Image (cartoon, rainbow, N blue to C red; front, side, top):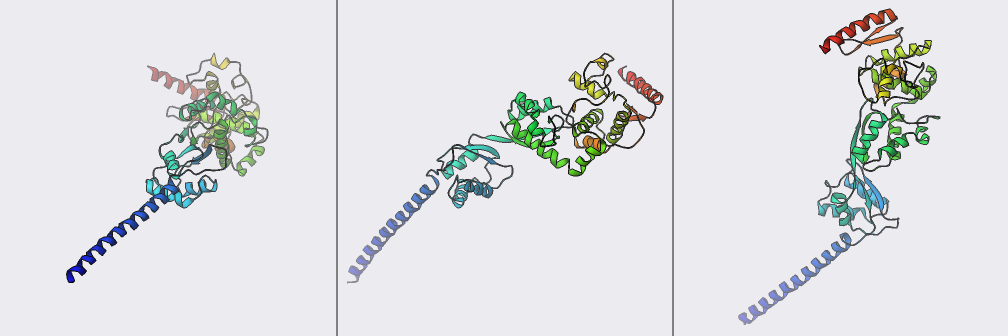
Amino acid sequence: MRKETLMKSERGSKYLRRGEIIILSAVFLAVLGLLYYTFFTPNYYRKQAPVKFEINRGESLNSVADRLYDLEIIPSKSNMRIAAFIYGAEKRIRAARYYIPDGLSYLDLLDLFIKGEAEFLRSVKIFNGMTTELIASRMRTDLLVDSAEFIKSVSDDSLAELIGPGLKSLNGFLLPGEYYFYEKSSPAEILAKFVEEFNKFVSDSLTGRVKARGHSLNELMTIGSIIEGETNSKDEMPLIAGVYYNRLKIGMRLQADPTIQYLLKSWRRLTYKDLRIDSPFNTYKYAGLPPHPINNPGKNAIMAAFNPAEHKYLYFVADTLGGHQFSRTYSEHLKKAGIYRKWLNRQKK
């Protein structure tokens, strides 16, 4: 009797285990099906495909998921985050500009952000005194932007007027600094960032000084560009600015070497023949300011143009230590210039 009972118990035990396996299998398949349905099936949106989507430098996955949901590219932020956790994608998505086709699953979308085709966010450094042509060349090299189109867009007055009414060009207003742009960005998109940065720097209090000085914003930036071409010394810039304002006040020619270097398109020691070039940019030949800035000056040079030192100097010449010496009279200037020339000639021997 006991033996019979034991056999029935064993059969029941085997039956229950078999049942548990069936139940577990059913649950597993159900979960697997749910996961597949959730993460592998296509998500469709109601916009025109593909949708341009940019992931910013340092942006978190949560922020990316929120924006994708707000744009109705994905139906669930939570599912996107879970899929990213499963994929191990939280720290692997790249800062870039993407074009998202319609019908991607969550995992397909993450795959695009991790290793798919994209236009990457690049750092571009613009140095003090770079010409617009040189900046255009940098945009071509770093961002694959058409340099000719970039230069053409710099003269788009609709963009220039975002800085000041009546301004015809952004030449001279491309504020040096480090910028982040997406590859293949349009020139208008890039220049809009330059406009934004310039307007941040030149506050209302500074622009108020434009009228006070009796010059236009373009003229002040032209002075700033000449100062930038003269010196790298922050301390000397206001002094040099004061010299040029003093000359303008009495109608004296600026006789600024950087304006001739601008015409030559490359730096070299100037000759007397260079000083006779017939151009409105030749400040040895024509009085007043050139038509527009000769480069894109840095913040220190711009501040010097807006805030020149008050003094009576009309002349300056390079010294033997990398700076300049300033003079009030021409005879004093000639004496200092002669000392510098003798020193310069000795260096060639």
